[in-house]
Amino acid sequence: MRSFKPNHWNILIGLILGAIVGIVSHEIADRSQFLKGWLTFATDTIAYPIGQIFLRLLFIVVVPLVFASLAAGVARLGDLSKLGRIGGRALAFFLLTTTFSVVIGLVAMNLFRPGNGFNPETRAELMTTFEQDSAKLAITASAQEVETTIMRINQILDMFLPRNIIGAITQMQMLPLIVFGILFGVALSLQSPPRRDEMTSWLDTISDAMVTIVGFAMRIAPYAVFCLIFVVMSKFGAQLLVKLSFYVLIVIGCYLIQLFILYPILLRTTARRNPIDFFRRSIPIMVTAFSTSSSNATLPTSMQVSQRDLGIRPAVAGFVLPLGATINMNGTALFEGCVVLFVAQVFGIELPIAKQGIILLLCVISSIGVAGVPGGSLPLLMIVMAQVGVPPAGIAIVLGVDRLLDMGRTVVNVMGDIVTAAYVESAEQREDIRAGLRMDGRMDAAQ
Ligand code: ASP
Image 1 (cartoon, helix red, strand yellow):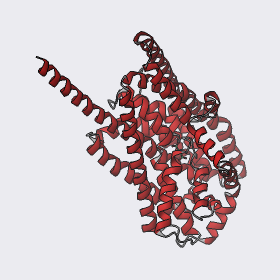
Image 2 (cartoon, protein in one colour):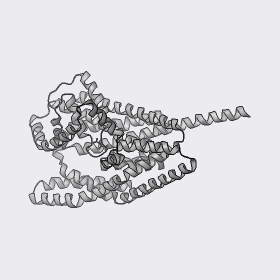
Image 3 (cartoon, helix red, strand yellow):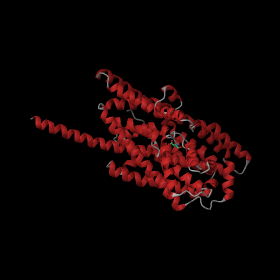
């Protein structure tokens, strides 16, 4: 896989400057209508398009990159039992880390109860301000609800095995693309070796070309990230953050526990890696996830960094990372649990432990279906709220600070995939050693 020059320090500077300039502009513009007009002009006609060009350059490569690297990765595995083994390990690890993350969130929310005694006037004010946004989300959420059993079965099948793969791809559905990529790779591995190798080499070239396009995006990344964060922060306003500070601090605290306590323990014990070195090498991935708020947009960077700097073999990275970006959302599951409990506390709704068990289950399941795009979790979160008797419209209370928390949870989501890939890589290395020993044993016996 070709590489693009890392400029993550410049991106980080762009991110910090964008946040500072955005917050300061918001505070200044708040004082005059004239300045407010200028700020809207600057965000809408200058910063927004620049940020979007960068994001779209990342999004545009996702479909060909996922397909080409997954199909080549699977074809290269050779032995199909390896595919089952890698897939099984990755899925078990995804499930384990996602469950842990929801437990962290639920425990923190029960311990600190940030929603208790939340000012009723602030609650009413936030509900009115974000009423329209939550109504729009409710429409998306109700569109995802199903009625009959046949509809439900079809809907589940459509999620990963649609009738028309092109139709699914045009709607940016990743799961069908992954299934198709795996099927293609399996079928390719069954072709005659010269034909299989020729096609695999074509697929490698497609992946390399896609990474080159990511390189183009990375050239404008520091400016684009400045613009992305500036747009978010200039609309944000520190006042809202102050009102919801307790809730925000707890959610961020949970992200940090997951990121800097749970993941390092897993890295040390299951992947036998030095967590400090691992995280240092993963900085470009974390910066991209934080600034784009999208697992999908971060995928090209994670694929490249994991193979180039983290020593993860292409077959593992090409399989685990696209799958993870689509179904493994640890940070999102954690966040969902926190929101459900917070809104319940604000409304004075008691959620006994058995109900919290259901919330745990629903958060794990719903996070699988969340799209890896900014705010992808919100419609599904409303469905979870409705199912446990917490008013979905209450989401309005937290919508104003959501983008900030989205940036954090995307980092947790993406790092969950990278840690899983490191674990699978280390397990595969152990399998290689075992296979080597078996081979040596056979050769000794033959002599
Ligand atoms: N922004 C998240 C991601 O792409 C999804 C979400 O939780 O809204 O990973």
